[in-house]
Image (cartoon, rainbow, N blue to C red; front, side, top):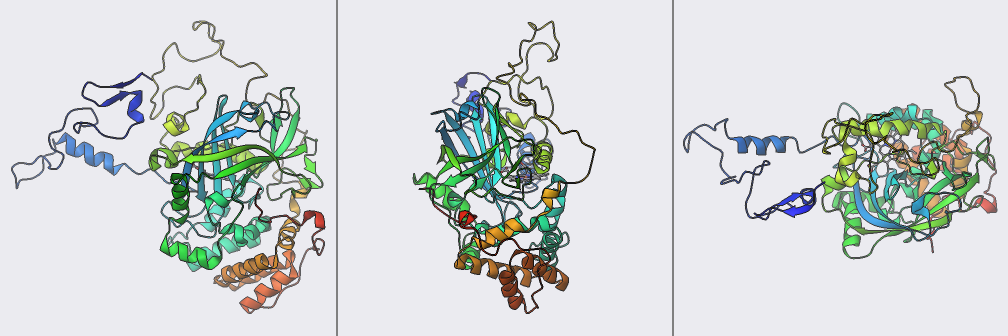
Length: 538
Ligand code: HEM
């Protein structure tokens, strides 16, 4: 990129061109030719036909015709902000990631989102919220692509198209609330009972947050951290909002939906503009990297399970402050491309089958959404670390690569001494045993328990929170048109809690079925009573 310059006529050139607002002493075409008139087409006489030769007319209209890009296939509706992350140094013993060393400050960009709505949908609907953070570290980009709910609907990425097809608006009318589309979601989550835990969180107050500023965030999967000595630790990432966790009540959310569909994005932008910068502490739960990757009987590779914080407390490792709004929604919020595979030395993935599928999916979808393989060159996606990637050409290439062709081994380009040392490189620097196994399309038996943690969540709720959950299930199942779906919904609830099932059944005017699995302990043990509770950090 060239030096920052201004042309003799006051127009920005070179590196400044992608940073500044459009402006200047006169209008030009995209090629820089001065324009004398942009208000009238070239015509054969004042009342005559428009001439095809009018380049300016065609350039203006053609570019406009292509202003929109495909919205994200999920998480299309979002709002974002810039900020900074300051590490406490508390994780320095378990990861060599430089941005987690004490006092390190790293610029970040965070995009919050709903999952199912289209780009123009309303903010305060009942849904999971995305919480995706891009850390522009000195060692490359690290993306923590999480949600505001610590578990997921599915245990294996191969089910992702199924859950999303079931939840998106019905194909014929594109109305999410259409009877048939509403039924497809409930049909799926009641047949596919590993979705029970996540669905229960959705039906709780967590499904209708008060503000993006008042949500927790979760990395969901278990990650593997690697320290300077090569020792590994398994972790789950948590964001804890300094403002505490707050929700709307259903009636508020409904009114906000109608009065101000932009409620959450307005709230975030207004707060930042007013200098009320939202803050989150990043924390980790840590687990020994044992061969079975279990902790207290909980399978760490199962993304439908949490580890209660009383069993593994969340240790704060840094503070994030969001302090600037994007200056251009399209260039930043829309074009940002997160990826679970954007990792830095000291942070690695695990064998979680949901996580593994995500490693493939994001770049694949972004090649379509952002028009080719070069979206890492877009300003919002550019790493702050030096790049020497051997990638060439492709749609929307903006780099002017110099030197000989990038290949290795290579004797013509100074020997190409461009690999990192084993201690400074990212990706597979720590050999991890892969258990000898047969090829199977199957999951471990520990993945079969779909209800005990949902029950733990329910039992940890206050009476008011339980009322809200009961009302939500009664409302949602009540909107199902298919009687069999309603009845199956009640059978799922019976496996969570008989009281919950009885109250919803009463609301629906249907008999309450019996549980089909043995219920976990009737009351939460005192030690686990906080599961899923809302609490402020301080
Ligand atoms: C987008 C989170 C599972 C495919 C997103 C975004 C978030 C997110 C926060 C929005 C990113 C943004 O703001 O630009 C999660 C979480 C998951 C999960 C927490 C499970 C724990 C999956 C799975 C797949 C998937 C299993 C596919 C196999 C996608 C796709 C996008 C997306 C295609 C759109 C990306 C783009 O166009 O930039 N996800 N997701 N996700 N996710 Fe996931």
